[in-house]
Amino acid sequence: MADQSSRDGMGYHTSAILQWTAAQHAPHDAGLVRAFEAPSREEMPAIQIGPNEGRTLELLLRLAGARKVVEIGTLAGYSAIWMARALPPGGHLWTFEREAHHAAVARANFEAAGVAERVTILVGDALERLAEIEPEGPFCAVFVDADKGNYDRYGRWAAEHVRSGGLLLGDNAFFFGRLLEEGDAEAAAMRRFHEESRAAFDTVCLPTPDGLLLGVHR
Ligand SMILES: C[S@@+](CC[C@H](N)C(=O)[O-])C[C@H]1O[C@@H](n2cnc3c(N)ncnc32)[C@H](O)[C@@H]1O
Image (cartoon, rainbow, N blue to C red; front, side, top):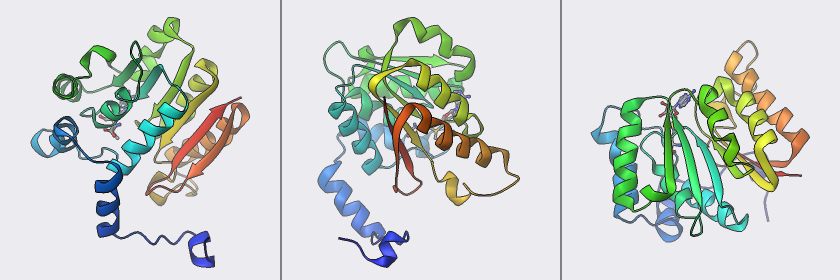
């Protein structure tokens, strides 16, 4: 059930409720703790997804039977570890990261989490390097979590390279509350990401803290 307030967007979650439910449904082992806490130890921003979103990615990939997954935006590898653990034997994750230091931290975190063999990090601008993995496609899922001004381009790439029944996932789909701002080029790119992804995917925007666009390729 819902009520008018929750339909209008009010959430009933509090910080304590989020922490309690994450502890129930998205518990961390040592590998996830290490990756989640890396931004507090390293020279990098603490902009990783939360545990509830990580578990959501993992379960969605399992539901889709994903074997070949692409991530745009690695940071310390936290979301990548969740996704890598969703893969069956022989599955693979390709993750793109522009900053060499972030990639080095993520690589060590993948080793510690026991997923290094099923993850390839490509260092550099994703838009420049995506073509390199195209021979591995079609892919089962693409998770976009990098530069917001290029989400429309990443969505177009996903529409071309995700198999039928595969997933498009886009974090920050509410663009930090600025999605509808006029005169903001990044907000406009995020709106195009929403609008254009509907053409190739059956879509919904899940109301996670900053919105998670989910699409199933037709
Ligand atoms: C929000 S963080 C990713 C967080 C990660 N997905 C997680 O939840 O653990 C975004 C990352 O994307 C990287 N990035 C930004 N623009 C990029 C680009 N054009 N190509 C590759 N990586 C990019 C940033 O350096 C940053 O590490």
